Every structure is written in C-alpha cells, then in structure tokens.
Length: 324
Length: 307
View 1 (tube, rainbow over the protein chains, first blue to last red):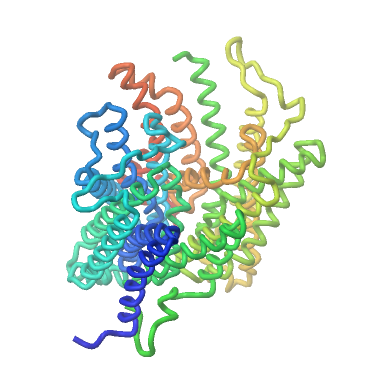
View 2 (cartoon, each protein chain N blue to C red):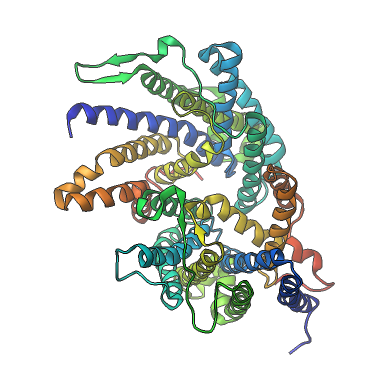
C-alpha cells in the first residue's frame, strides 16, 4: 500500500474536526452548533448516497429527496399510530422497527422506480426520477390522516437500545457514526469489482456490455443501495427535526442534494461532505442576512456550474493526484 | 355521475391539456433543437403570469396586458438564452439541470422581491366574466372557453410556423442536423435565440391564461414544469405532435381521475375504502400512466424520427 495521499489526510482531518468541534461547542454552551453539525451529518449521508449513483455511476437522479421523505415518514407514521391508534400492526416507537422499515420501503421504491427509470438514458432519466419523486410528494399531500400539506409532528423519537436520541449529544454521535459508516460503505463498494463495473459503465457503457456485464442489473443494484441509504438518512432527519412535511421531498430539496455532491466534488469520498458543509454554511450565513437568501444562493450555484468545474475537492487536490 | 358533469370535467381536462401543451411545446422545442434541458421553463410561465397581472393593473385591460406581456416574456427568454443557456450548450445535461436550477432560485426570489410573497389575482374584463349555457343543465364560464380557444389557436399557429414557414424549415433542419444548417450559412446562434424566445412566450402565454383563474403566485411554475416533463416523456421528447397528444391525454386523465375515480372505485370496493384510496391514487395517476408508457415504449409514444 502506498502512503496516504494529500486528499486522504484531508478526509481524516475534516472528519476529525467534525467529530470534535460540535461536542466542544455544545459543552461550552453553544448547543446551536451541535444542531448544525447533526443536520450536516444527516444531509451528508444523503449526499454520500447520491454520490454513489450520480458521481460513480453517472446516473443523474433528480429525485433523491423522495427517499429522504419516505424515510422520515417511515418513522413518523408508526409513531403517529402508536399515539393516536389505528393500524395496530404498524404502531410502534421502536427504532429497531422504524429504521429497518425506512430502509426497506426506500429500497422497494428504488427497485420499482429504478426498474422503469434505468430503461431510459440521459435527460429522460433526469426527468423521470424527478417525476417519481413528485408522485410521492403528491401522494403524501393527498393523505389527510398524516397531515397532508401541513405535515406531521413526531411526538416520540425512535427508541433504540444504548442510544437515547432525545439527548442532542447522543443524536449527533449516532448521526456522525452513521455518516462514517455510509462513507466507508460507499468507498468499499466503489473499490470492489461491483464498483469497477459501475464506474466502467459510466465511462463507456457499450464497452462494459461487450465485456459481458449486465449493466442494467448493476445500475439497478446501485440505485437500490443508494435509495436505501438515503432512506436511512431520512429516518434520522425525522428524528432530528421531529416535524416532517411533504416539503422535505420538494424537488428543490433534490436539487440541493445534487448541488452538495457537485459542489463538493462528485465521485470522491470527501466531496459530498465538503459540499454539505458548504451548503449548511452558505445557508446559515445568507439566511441570517436576508430572507431572500435564495437569490445569492442561486447566483452562486450558477457561478459554480459555469466556472468552477471539479468542485471543492478539485481545489484541494495535490499535484499529480488525479480525480478518481 | 351525470353526463353534464362529465362534459364539464372533460372540458376542464382539455383546458388543462392545452395549457400543458403551451408549456411542454416550448420545452420540447428547446430540447429538440438545442439539446438543452431548461428546468427554469416553469419560471417563465410564472413571470408571464406576474407581468400580465401588473400590466392589467397599469392598463386596466386584460387583453392589452397580454399583448404587451407576451413580447416581454420573449425578451426575458432571449436574455436567459444569451447569458445562461448559451454558455452551457457544450456541457452535459447535468450542468444544464444544475445551472437552470440556480436560475429558478434567482427568478423565484426576484419575483418575491418585486411582487411580494402573496399571490396576485388578475381581474377579468366584464365581457369575459359571464357564463355560456351550452344546454339547459350545462353552464361553463366563458373565460374557460377563451382559454381553450387561445390554446388551440396557439397550437395551430405553432404547427403552421414549424411546418409551413421558412423559419419553421430552419427549425426542423436545425433539429435534425445542426452542423449542416450552420454550414449552409444560417446564423444558428440567432436561430437558437429565437427558438428559446418563442418557447418562453408560449410558456408565458400559458401563465397569462391561467392567472385570472388561479392568480399569479411564486413557485406556480415549479408545479407545472414536472407535469410538463411527464407530458413530453409520454409524448416523446422533441416531438411536437407527441407534446400535443401527450398534453391532452395527461390533462384529461388528471382532471377526470380527480373527479370520477372515487365513483369508479365504489363499483368494486366499499364506499369508505373508495373515499380514502381514490384521492391517493388520483394524485399518482399521471405518474403511473407515465411508468406504464415507459415500460412499453421507453422512447415515448411519438419519438421524433430524426436524432
């Protein structure tokens, strides 16, 4: 094994800072920054999951917010029935049921929609993922029992053994560890034979097909993994905000996730994390100045697309190190 | 379910379909010829509605406001092409999507700054406020007939423009072989800008026509754009005929599904179950149709022959 690259050290440094600083801020009387870091970690997981198919797989999904929303409602709906009755088989506050439910529902949704989406290419794929996400949005809006447009309050957070999600410090720790696991998982996947096929198909699909790989099956598998991982992030987000609404899966949320991946640097381990940090920081700073913060944010987004290719990671790259 | 209600809802469906066509035709035109994905197309629809609302108050005349607002949205489309779309043509679709997503945020926030957070209702002149009795039991607002008429005229005008004029010939030629057209000495950049402005005007017109019914509001374009995507996916991206038939199909299915699905469900399930499941299914109906079409014909119902 060669020694670690500059970017490798960078990843370790960023992740170490993210582990140490928020609890320090919290313990010194600045709980706000811990909340920010928790949200950052959760969005980071969603961005990491999107990076698997968008960055490594070259599949531009514009519907990832649907998985976040489905994951959150998989926590909210059982908790709602536990409190208000009805649907007894579903009513629970146990995270050991809710979180696997979130992952399973999202994996299933990814399997069904992915099977349709992946039959198409390019711009069709972008629009169809968007349309399916909007379908879930309207579905949730139409169900009055779960609040419809107004959303749903999660009165009781998921109950887990050993971890108390009501404690902000433990919620952060849980989210942070989950982020590390997600990053490790995606890193492992992309370095495996499976990941090589996925990346190969991004570079030249015809070549991989000629080599005898069933590209469709590989992509669908990656899509399901990505959706399930994003659903997990959604379950955490529901526990973090304790208020969920269809707005979580509005397509501008999907756009923001894409922005994190692209701004940070697609197809890199650290990229989605840097992108999430940049997004949270920009959002916090701009929205503290003006309620019209989407204006400078939109201009920034356009500037990044027009002029800064390769993302933030591209700026940090050492000499002689290529993008993965 | 009685017949007159069915006819009224069918007319509503046609009206929605024609509005969708106005939005989708611009999208499919720009995509077919420029190979450019414009997410911000819905913002042009919104700007059309707001411009029309403001001008109606300035002139005190809705029709005059529409006539002035139309070229204005064309100019906005022209500027968007020049400063956002043109630098992105050579890039991949991902960059188109991200760049125009940024543009949506900018345009929506600008609209918020200029017109405020609340929607603006657009008053209609008196002669458009009445109702037309088609039969004894069948009464529909005359403005809805105006929308249908305007939508059909715009569609007819567009077919004439694309199929029977010199500009239309260039547009079709540009769609099938861009390099050849410019090699023949046609100023392709101006042609592209014109196509973009035309698409903007069509979307703007749709916004102006709907504004008196729903009022102009921030984000109104972000809802219709996805439905317009469904339309062109079903119809076949880049095909004008596909956009027209797809738009009417989606408009009718959506409207009729929302009104009659519960009655249909009551035929084979309990009334309670129908009442709860019908809204959920009708909300998803057009997306299910889209998935069905795609699984049978991944290129849409009427894929354009060239490309």
